[in-house]
Image (cartoon, rainbow, N blue to C red; front, side, top):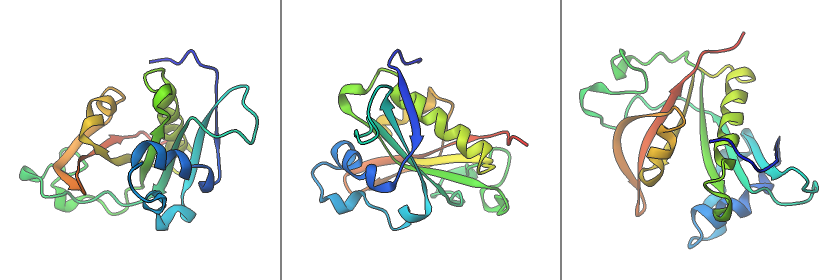
Length: 176
């Protein structure tokens, strides 16, 4: 889906992600639940309405981290992150980028904002970080959305608190 909303996507400080993460992902939990110990080591991006001022809040956020792909999470048949590889033998030298805390304001969902931000994050991971795989723990309720954007499921479903998740990934051609 292409957005008709004029967007500006830019790298931002992690502090600019926290409010939207909380509002969209875990509104009933304390705000500290959306802060990650690894945030200081990540790359954080925000989508802004094009004419917004620098001090405006983002309408969507995503955070990227260099993080090994789990071998698998108990998947039968060894369906790890890499097709045609036994999940126990996933190459450790693979550069993997994990995205976390991806959130879009509820009133902006379905307008291409999240798709544009995800595409930007994938391009950054591929070109700047040389990622060969881009992955996440996705809420099962969002898995079809991610599938529509080129990610595929691997491993078994699992729970984080009351929410069911599945791992998803996209294999990438690294730009030289």
